[in-house]
Length: 169
Image (cartoon, rainbow, N blue to C red):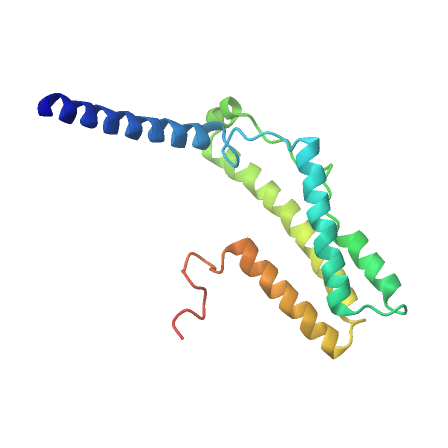
């Protein structure tokens, strides 16, 4: 009786490990963020837009934007609004990517990085333009918001070093 129970326990443990492995493999192959990811659904896009609007409203309130600054605020929001670029290079599918040579893959990555650099330069210019309109107190609030956003987005560590550059302090 004890031997049967022990064998059942071992079998159930093995099955649970196998199930966890299959789940991890499914997420890596086609799950969210994996190579086979799909375009966001309209519901996901609406949820993202709602979250973005809430964050912008909170920042607007925290900055205490005056009526004289409202035009600069609206211009800033319009410039940083995320939009899918139309001129992005087409991403090759798995089969095409596998057939590419190393130089072709690097060329494709370089093209993507050039577009990313352009988008970042535009966003940086918009932030600098808006930042110049803010009072020193508002700039401090904006800096704090930006710092929290970076920590949230990048998990509080940079460059592969846990804790960031100030971790050793």
